[in-house]
Length: 118
Image (cartoon, rainbow, N blue to C red; front, top):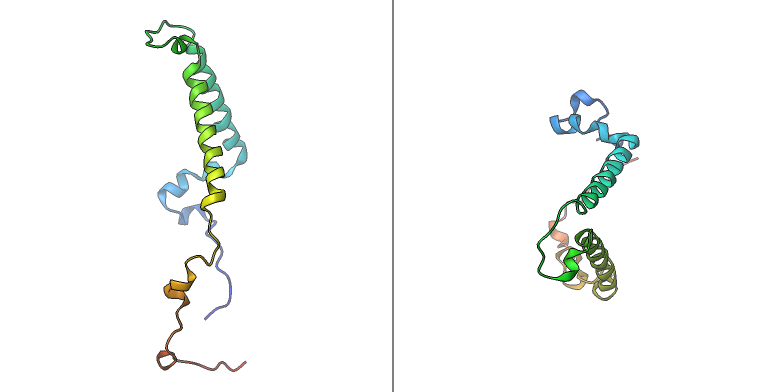
């Protein structure tokens, strides 16, 4: 058996179809373009909120950009809440190990031991 580590394929011809189509994302300049396009899209949607009249049930809904701000702050609150919950719910790596199958001793009579001569 070879002791060499296998490196990932770098030849695009050997990649699957989807892998070849997504190779353009390897360039960080293209990823930055996607981020900027998302910023422009969000700014355009907020600007569009000023251009029409809404029928609202609550007075707070009449504020332009309310739903954009609400969505942003609620998603940020979810992330912060998840990080706080992590402090209480996090377990160490050996939490399940006393009753884990991997922690059981394997029967010696079922092991086949081989000696390797260097």
